[in-house]
Image (cartoon, rainbow, N blue to C red; front, top):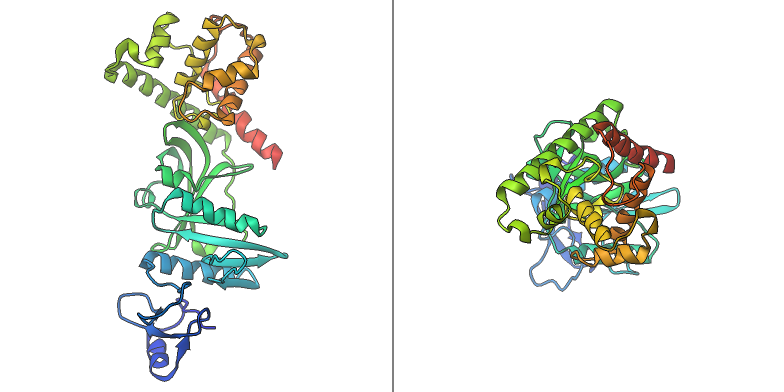
Length: 371
């Protein structure tokens, strides 16, 4: 078996090309060894081949380079790091397969944007044979030169799919840039609204990476204060923008709730719009879905301790894609209000940024306890 790793010199490969014959390990038909000055050396089937599991053909240079770099890295930390093995039971070929402590882990390095159902289908295939894949996204260009530390990030729906929950760091996105040979971590992600998040960005050169992949630290106290400042700032900006740019007027669901509850959006109490655990189930900003929930309960004349799961299900039916996760987030918000001494949607209480700090801290401390 020949693996075209980065340590093989082009002159040596050109010599191989003239003196050796190569065959596809899948279909056993002859393949060409292509060694140019620009494109990464690779094997290619002849055009008339009927092989349905071609190796590395049609791949972008970024994907091929990244896959080979990952193979080189993982081969130094695992006795069994296999490049593109065929898993006959499910007819799938991961980019890499790692055998560690009697557990097989498929590694997929995703460069191109493909339909999400296809990603889900491939993941389900691995799960059918008892494997949990690790998906590594090619670092998006917009993130290659951003500073490390706490910041705000906007991910596409495709990029969001690669976010995984990993206690104690919370939601984590792992990416790799083969051009700079650097891993980019986006950890402890806190949903703001839509596809916007607050989180921590870390760079890790490939020479410092190993397997299992390094897991960055949870936010420090100083980091958490930055989270609070950013969250409060974005909440205030979104509320101001809502009033200034909204063209629906009172027909807008959020402004309608403000009007009927006699609340000015810019004066919204700080306990309406808090980052409850599970808030990413909603695409709406926290202050929108939470105010709409309070308005719903007020119209039903329900105190918080009388709210049932059915009531919350009724509420989430008013949103796109109602789900159990949305219902759970609503339940957690009601529990938060009760803990802070509120009994009814019209009650008032003082709630400073220290309260936001406590909520965010509690989320990451809970993740750490689970770990």
